[in-house]
Image 1 (cartoon, one colour):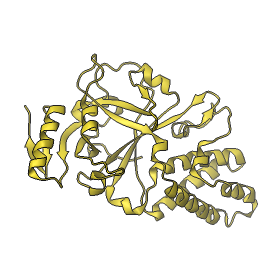
Image 2 (spheres, helix red, strand yellow; image 1 turned 45 degrees about the horizontal axis):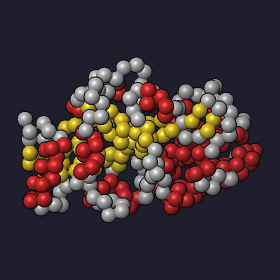
Image 3 (cartoon, helix red, strand yellow; image 1 turned 120 degrees about the vertical axis):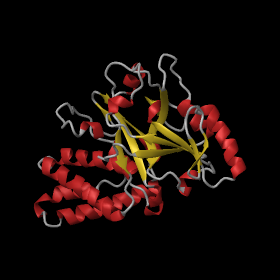
Image 4 (cartoon, one colour; image 1 turned 135 degrees about the vertical axis):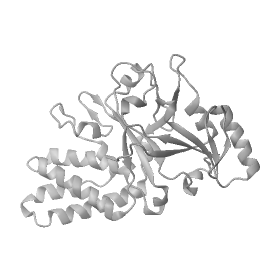
Length: 306
């Protein structure tokens, strides 16, 4: 688990994203923002997945090298050939599963329903060129600085009552192969210590871990992004709707807009590689979308609305 209490995270976005975050879609609730969390499958990189499986197999070979009596378990690990397979776990009753495992379950079909994983991306860097300019020639013109509160319930705007069917967990993205292997080894050891007597349970627990690697592991060339991902796992998306969070399913994947209190926003920052004139135009957009918020350009306030 990542300790971020009292720290700032930065969410990169464009004009449409800025408007969406600060437009209040619930007239009964005030002083809120909404951060978009997309389904975990959108964060799957096939090339990274192949590399991760190779690392997984290597760690397994080393781990089982002195465990000749566990040949069947080792061979079962080598039969996992893609991260996509980690989404398929045999149907069965998991009511007796350890409570620390259930929140990590990937979106798999099981007897009582379906667990979905949603992700939102943040960075510890407020000025990263790779994050300003990303895929499909899209550009992020703004970063929103969010202050991480101490208690999850305190993030929720006034007006959300009853039991919230999720919690947000922050997970740092791992870029270095050595750290990836260490993470795999820790998960492998835990699964072996708890489930070595039952091959099916052993493989199932490993697949839960593997399903996380697709959004926790990235190539080292992206390490300057210093990315942290916020993760929400829910056993039933329908329960989100009951709490005022709409689950939307466009053609490019499911997503949810999660409410947070407006006071988490410390500032809005403008992309550093624009001209002063362009910065003024972007500041005007920020002023319209985000009144009463400090707007920074190259570290200095360009606009403050009182």
